[in-house]
Length: 82
Image (cartoon, rainbow, N blue to C red; front, side, top):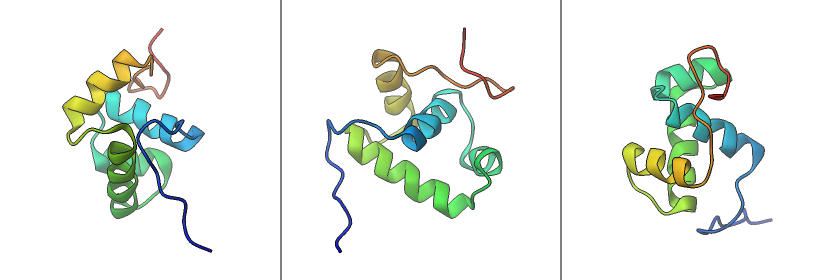
């Protein structure tokens, strides 16, 4: 069975939202990997898929997109901003 192709405009999964909050919170790929108990390579791949899905190329673009779409940035303690 072929993998589903992600296209811009598809809703974000729970994992993608979690990843997006961490990116918007300013965490590095290494920090995200530690937080999610994944390898840095897996995080890099997931971020690339997320960026393609929302139609951005860079971290700053994603952070702006996240703010525009109401995605709360994760804080250092792991919670969304209040």
